[in-house]
Amino acid sequence: MYNFGNMKRILIVSGLFCILNNLFAATPVTYDFAVVDGDTLRMDVYMPDGEVKAPRPAVLFAFGSGFINGSRSNPDYACFFDFLADNGIVAVSTDYRTSLSKSDPESLGSVAGFAEALGGAITDAVTDFYTATGYLLANAGSLGIDPSMIIASGSSAGAITAIQAEYGLVNGAVPGGVFPDGFNYAGLMSFAGAAVCSGDSLAWKAAPCPMMLFHGDADRNVPYGTVSAGGVSLCGSKTIAESLAGVKALCEFYTMAGADHSVAVSPMHDKLYTILGFIRHIQNGSLKTSLDAVEFVPGAPTDYETDFSISDFIRANMP
Figure: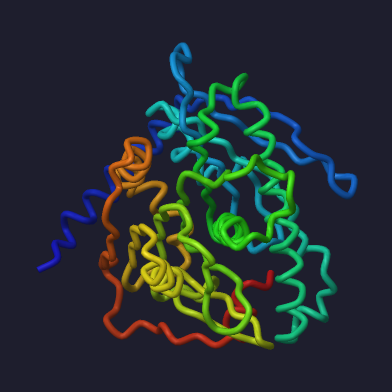
């Protein structure tokens, strides 16, 4: 039987750890890495303490907030960044364009209008994520980063961005010269993310990098499964995990039963050592098997809703 009392104590201890950690949080160094449409894009780099004796792995993280707003310095992520830095991992929180905020509000009210605007926003965000990746590769020496150990990550819209970036890399959608030949992310960590594809299924031309996916099955902001409109689908973590099995790609998939979109943040507080284990396995080349785990949210009703329409997702994402 699942022990809800133990889970509650773990969450409380984890929350206290994050609060205490934030009192002594490291101050990141901010770098300008691009100017797009007159806006300067920046990244915050959280460096581990101590002398750089060997190149370090890096996590390139994209923030959430529905491609409408959001901030790379959101305090909800501070515990995560500091934890990574404390464990010898360079944490990089990057800007990207939130282009959905510039769309005509009236057009966003229709399924077709929302789908078109969302597609454009994701394209802009992925382009900027690639630019940020290129900056890290070009400055890996001065930042003490191992260019073969850059892990893509993100929350919600940022997770969609990271996954779509990997999908584009594997499927040859990145223009030549953007990255060195043969470049790929060493791994990917998604907190309530999804991928966009034509039709109703993801088609990987080759096995992508190892992935760690967290998602609540009661998420009405980003689909846990798949929603489709106008020949385009938004495929959530369940669909992604199933597609990865088809190409024999390694994946650690964590379903948070009964959880809503809070999973876009919660693992960065209460699953820190699970995340660290994934990163260490990537570093050591010791990740050999996939994992499909279900964890139950304390207090969640047994009859919670999981079947949402495209209209439900549009309403949930509009400010």
